[in-house]
Length: 217
Length: 217
DNA sequence: CTACGTATACTCGCAGACGAGTAAAGAAAC
DNA sequence: GTTTCTTTACTCGTCTGCGAGTATACGTAG
Image 1 (tube, rainbow over the protein chains, first blue to last red):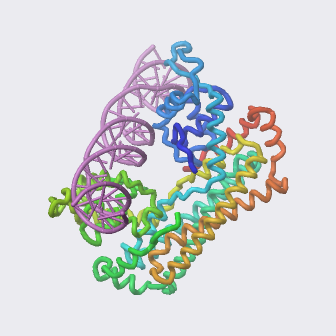
Image 2 (spheres, rainbow over the protein chains, first blue to last red):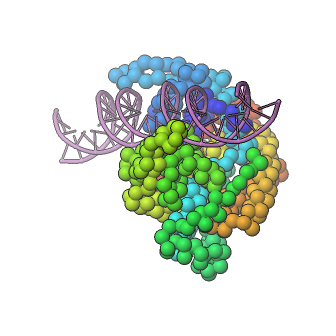
Image 3 (cartoon, rainbow over the protein chains, first blue to last red):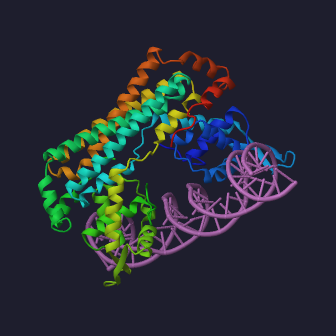
């Protein structure tokens, strides 16, 4: 069970891991994280950085070590990770690795409401998606190969995973697209009919209603 | 480019599509959406429902039609979708289907910080994940087959996609796990060494630093 | 008929997210 | 040497997310 984290924003985990290597002030954390491309691996919004750091401090996961100005520089606070902070980071990492979580993507949301459009339009949208996916896969693959020479595998694993999932997505989209194009998608004609005659008819809606009844959750 | 939505919460899209079928009051929207299992396809928090509906109304995507009490019931407001609302929903759906978006999962975040743990612990965490994934895949597959008889394909497509991605994830985890177990993961020994001797050494950190340099974005 | 559970239908308040803005210092151009 | 640009380093205010709480009606077991 995903225990409530004192600071739930994933940016906090990134901060903890980076500040574990050496004490830093917030802006430096941001630079290092950006240099490592961590903002590709997590949904990081830099506007949240200072809030997150402050909350980490409030919960005793970070502590300020050297606050004050050097030369004429604006004041800045250097933070160090505490023992509790290190424990939190490790525990959080364990949870993220071991426990699969259902996190529906935006695409899934799109699929679940695609009935509102007609089958032909959906096909053309998916075709577009497939093109874009293939471009990105190609680019990512190149980039990954380029890095493989210089960077230890350990730091490429997330990119490999992301790439594998993109490929799976592309394969799936291609397969549905083939059904739509070939006219072998079950119920495709009814779908088209109902869509052309104004919005979804109530009886079809009623079918959807029973989409997912009681789950043994 | 993902245009700014007047109400960006995906719950708003769900509300728009459901209220397109017939006017409803908010609690009914929730019931219908829940009955259709839409909360599985999107990250829906019911606490946000009334806020979202209010915002949709504010932006002219919904309008109140019948407010007032029936019998001794508490007052409730029935909403109808406007033309703008219908357009917004269609446009949003198109965007979600056609434009792939990078949305890093929590697992990706976990992978990107797994260096903080040792290779042996990571292996055992991944083993655990794989077990859980396989259970869930089995359960989802069963459920999907059960529904296939009663429910049109159109309404199962998101579940099929989710299942396909789970399978891809399981396959990937299994492959990395095999490398770790077989000791063929490149750099595994260095990783172990560095991890045992306290935290990551600066030179390894420096390597990570160059993880993802300038991207031609 | 009355007590209690359960479904209905919301309200509220606070924490957090994050875009946009700010301001100083150093580099660079002229 | 002064204008301008970029980088460093944050602050602020708003909006929204959402968990927890509330209140009423309806069913039903005793």
